[in-house]
Length: 400
Image (cartoon, rainbow, N blue to C red; front, side, top):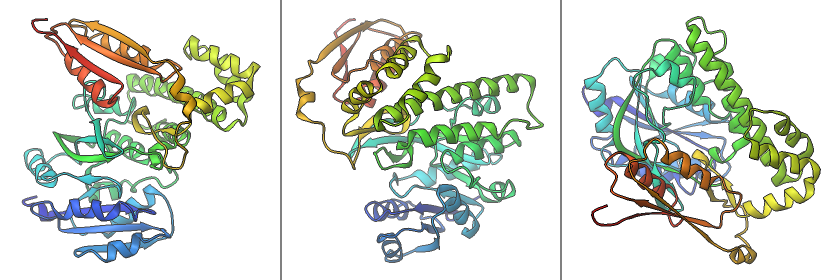
């Protein structure tokens, strides 16, 4: 690995005519440029293929629609370099990304995958970062942590032969297939490297894969289940995995209830599963009990709260590009201002913020007042404000 020309960039694309050209331009602008840019047209019926073919230095692989895993595998097989970078068609690289990855590979040639920090974007505005105090990259015990959460941000550069030797991405898992891949790779002795720089932009919107919460929850369950019976698991790792599986099953149950409330289908059955499981928070079980008693009313309330929005990656409410705008009645809901002063409360601030975010109404603002903290409390508050622009503000006064 001596220069960035040894990196191929694979862009899986499905119905991506609106964003594909921008993604490709962000790759071609890298200095030096990658060895090749491969767009995998995953059965698009719009102008995705024509746009890719019309851009210089881009090759196109066409296939019937098979999903993200299938498209990534097709790109891996077509690439001619040792290292392959993945970029979704609705995202983009920032200047210097491939050069920074190349430097990281020279410093640590033993890694099999490298990722980096990046920005999250909603409606053209940057609202946060992929990694931060609330979602850190794991560098110490990656075996244990990958069984708890997918700490590998998807804009990765991978060692092509290593992934192909493991069979590539599992095409039977349509969502979270990357998590399942990293579980297999890390349990097989692989290691993930990290560049602590913001080098790409990941878009959050209602039509993205990450907006399909229930499918993702089931995908996460399938990904974790694939680790059961792995011969290298230690006793402690099996305990971690079992806890994660239990948490993921509860996530599936409460997500299914949320979806049923929005669609007004199967409300009683999905709510009853949540109500009977004491592992769910008491407040959620109370909501489930109400839904079993008055499913139509509960559905109507939930649809009104969610009208015009969907839940994207990281749990953020983002505008749904297929839904109508919020109706005028929402403007009549009174706004509640919550004032939260803090001084060196890094251990408890996240939990306090979460109690506000968990409220059933969206008609609130949060004022985080930093009283001169010297620990990471201020960083936690700033991250929250970036993640919720217009809803959360950080205030400080001179001298603390």
